[in-house]
Image (cartoon, rainbow, N blue to C red; front, side, top):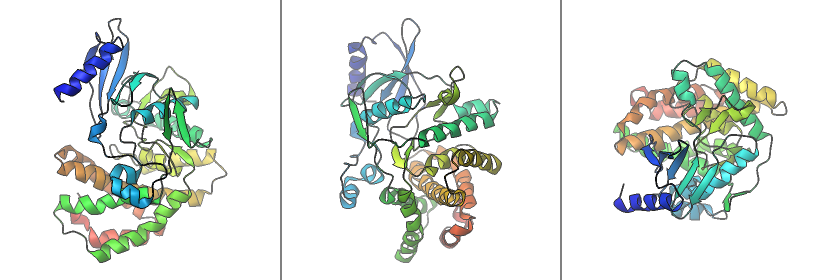
Length: 363
């Protein structure tokens, strides 16, 4: 961290009466954000969020064309929020309005990329399950959060506490640029030759219907990174409020299957096919108006697209950038991808992977 940034953080805390708080760095992730736990002199705790805007490319203007988005870079193309504090503040408020547990925001500075928010504790689903807590009740409640969110049509713009953020659509372009990162990063990591024009054209043709269906079905508020390391168990609260929500600032309007693919095909922990099937059944039983067959077809296809994105953009790219710990997650993500490609509707995509990324090239 630069001395200038640290000085800015110290001054921000001092200006808001938090200069005496004890600061403890928290574990980071693959993003450009960092977090600290603040312990105030009286013992109360808060979380200090640091998102330097200079580290991110431009976000997507709501009316930008596809060409303009591509020219602006990955964040605009994929409709990522670049860690925007405004996105966090407005989205957190919307989630709380739905009766869900997103952190309260005490103070923030959008330009500085700093905020102090409610501390929801350390009870991450992933940690609790590893320590022996039964996973099924946690996953049931996490699915119930999805059911609650999908019962309401989200607004076009989220507004709260003087912050506003557009809830854009996870459209075909955003899905494409994410999935296409597999083509960019996986061959590099594995030392493979770049895929030829014919293979890339076939890739585009096979995935295009998936991306089109994903955009056509984009009706639900979507957290976008909904998995066991972004969910906290809050047993003192009730019903769906027992799930604490983190890392939701990239939220979009998307196909209702999208968050379920993250939850039930978690790249960082094994989710059994049996638990996945039970949770999909729970969701579909609560939404009888949905066509089960169509939904499950879209779920498998979008889950496959997401797995390809994670293998490329997240794991291969991060490994090449000097974070080899992401290699440990790759075999699991390949298993999820192969599970999805076993759907007869995705046979041609399975055959593409079999031809161009054989077993020995799958980490």
